[in-house]
Image (cartoon, rainbow, N blue to C red):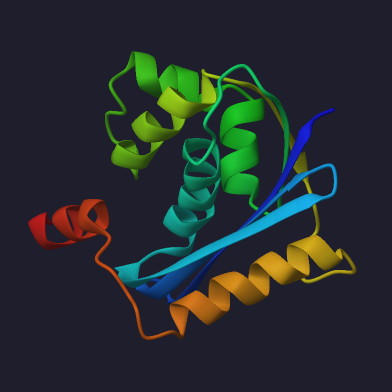
Length: 154
């Protein structure tokens, strides 16, 4: 049996308030995770959703199916771009802090990505969107330190 993960990220403005939503499904067991941020981007939230989902796992070597509507995340991994970026030290690439974090967790498992059309008739993707936008609109926003360091440095 594979662990099924649905993820979505949202940003109110780009940059702006943002959030991610995650559903982890293992058989009949389902867990939802969401968090909002004061200032971030949509791509960071899409990627962070996958990272947090993978980091939440307590065992290694799990077969995982990740469903996302983010071409940014899926193409970067499935087309191998991120591995080339890593070899070049992420020079000139956005979100190197998150990509390094992603690769650390990604390599602990057997992960396959599947693209789903956003805002379509997929109830799990729609629920992740609700979680992400709800978190972005919520009260308990935290700082996206990696983004703010990059944002204020430029």
